[in-house]
Image 1 (cartoon, rainbow, N blue to C red):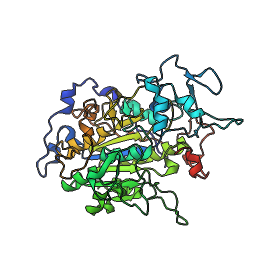
Image 2 (spheres, rainbow, N blue to C red; image 1 turned 90 degrees about the horizontal axis):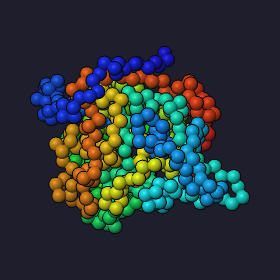
Image 3 (tube, rainbow, N blue to C red; image 1 turned 45 degrees about the vertical axis):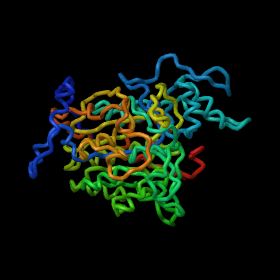
Amino acid sequence: MSERRVLVAAAALGVGVMFAASMGAHGHAALGQPNALTGIHKVRHVIVIMQENRSFDDYFGTFPGADGIPPGVCLPDPRRGGCQKPYADHHDHNSNQPHGAGGYYADVNGGKMNGFVAESEKYCKRGTSCRVDVMGHHTRTDIPNYWAYARTFVLDDHMFEPSHSWSTPSHLYEVSAWSAVCTRPGDPMSCTSTDYPVKRSASRPAPYAWTDLTWMLHRQHVSWSYYLDHGAFSNSPGHRGGVPLNWNVLPGFTDVHADHQLRNIRPLSAFTAQAKAGTLPKVSWIAPDRRHSEHAGALVSTGQAYVTRIINAMMRSPDWNSSAIFLAWDDWGGFYDNVRPPQVDGHGYGIRVPALVISPYARPGYIDHQNLSFDAYLKFIEDDFLHHARLNPATDGRRDSRPDVRESASGLGNLARDFDFSQTPLPPLILVPCPPDTTLIPKPKPGCTDSFRLHASTWGDS
């Protein structure tokens, strides 16, 4: 049976509810009385879906009401002369652009936000044509499902990558609010901040000695799982896909091993089955394989279809009415963005990324302009399930040498503002994973599948 969109009666919902009313009381339910849950505690299932390598302006730079691409912008183009203006780029396949720490500083260029073209062109070979698509942006008709979620639920237009660098530190911040290198195996006090952490390997299976959020969740008996699209990456014959090591970071934390919690790292098929049965854990993280990631080299259409299937499964679940889905992209991928990142502790924030909040309690059609980072996801989980405890060496029971408590940064917003817990819960928005009328070129194959090989060379400077 073909899937069809369930229309949301947004006009019947009051959007202008005061924030204090939307938060409501914060009491937990009495034992055996789930209906007594109030405020943020109505959310019993948090799902964080992390995709790859897109800037906010690349996906939502022309979204009405958002802090998008400003008029008249034109970035210096030293290779061709003159400057490049933003343009609608409908290509399903984009080029990979510099997005390490060097790329960050070059792109931001002291806050001018005008180094994107020049930095990308450094990697062009003399005498060859070079496709530099950093100024291209996708439109509503390219990614209609993402825009439908933004129109129906919440769009966060000031979500910044937590670090100045690429995927691995971003994924580490996602679960631990830090990226570090540790000089003594297993010693959390030997770690220091870095934009280039060690990638786990056969010789160093657990290089991350500092504390991640699962330590606190496990101590408080809060269930969690980390779901891997097609499992972990493997070179075994016949193994299809899998999440690369640099996106699959939780097995690298020593506390996950010490807690005997490796069994909570599971294939994505387990999430689908649990969603259907209504048995999801309190906290879920989902990481893509390369083909589904939207990382340049992979197709936009394939990634959108993958994410839509996950959200559809959640919306069909008995757990939908008590869930909050946070969808974001781990770094900017080198693509243009116009907003200067605010700075925290010398290692963040990085360049803006797209971010959506999808929940029956999301404020319908709301655009959140607060400054946010992935630390805000941890903060929301901590406020909901851990009585506002933080990844703080002084209080979390496992001291490490992190320089600050990221969830308590003075400039960090509160994702609870994206919810109205007094509203009638929004119904599901079931979407066709591969929309037939997309303007992506070439036209996606049925089901938005692809068949070309993905290999290291497609990742460029990654």
